[in-house]
Image (tube, rainbow, N blue to C red; front, top):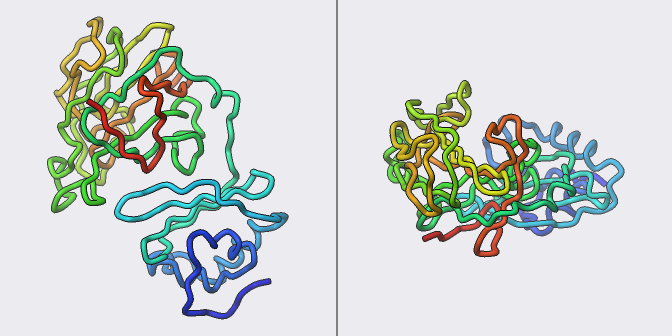
Length: 294
């Protein structure tokens, strides 16, 4: 039954799935930001909701992850695990965004881990912005070549930058040391690509300045979006785990300073398959986690 009456009482994040399925669209709509309402009308929201809810018997809250600046993401799956809803809530139950989509799952590759153990190629405390085994916590997941990749940045007080976003140097991750994730040989170095102005991207060279290493068992790691002219290793060089190999930047398909890290089964990431990483500490971080590496 559709809910047409606007009420002052807000629906909590944990109650969203049931409220959405039961047609309480008006109440939910008024919890969205003004920016959302300027793009999607109430009538459109109702129509999208009815269409998506068709055939659904129940939504179950699957996971909660921490996003930036006190925003949490809640993901619900329907009873068949074919449909998913991702909603971003603020601390006051304001809804900042919603994503309705089919739920992609790749159980066969999810079960295959790297044969080698790796460390995260950073030191200190970093934040997992993208990472995990579904498309809502890791946008790479639907792409076989990047399925188990991580995007890492540094957060302080919920922000990735100090004062303003105008310069790369304002971002905490910019110019931070990047380490070799395991012993190996450098097989590819791309350098000399200018760092982007924050907010802009260079899609012509998606990986930007990057290092690709070959490890035992025919596994390859890639560290991408490095700072221009910061790479400290050469192709053919043998490198030890934990050795500093370059510095974090904002080159390639990147809007702010961060590190893209993945392991794959080929030296060419566009032709290979991403592999789920077995970490040496036994932990597997996902979006919203803070990781500490030394």
